[in-house]
Length: 136
Image 1 (cartoon, rainbow, N blue to C red):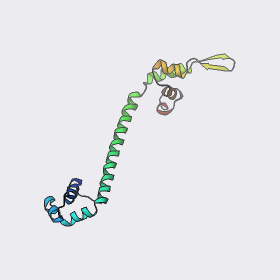
Image 2: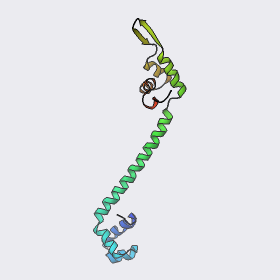
Image 3: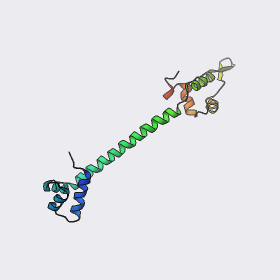
Image 4: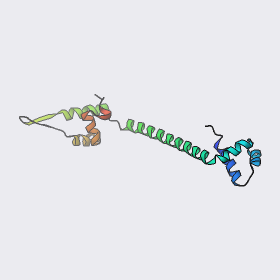
């Protein structure tokens, strides 16, 4: 379905609402009388379609902004590879308390605090999950 420019449609509708005849509207906006009659007859359907298109355009802009913000945020919050390696080396240190009882020297919480990285991100790094699954 093709439409004329929405500003022309709205102008025709406002002129008709003000009491102008189709012929006078045709002279003012320089479009055929038949087209104007169709626009006025189908006004509700056309307005719904215009509203749908505007909403789709707004949603697309919102999605683009969110994607760009997500890219910027993920790039800025990524932990440097040197830090990742240091965290993994420290986390791998274990001590044997008794035969069969092994514990880690550093907990996830202590490493998160020491490197100023959130606990969930630290856990992802150490367990090689999420964004850090491919990092070495």
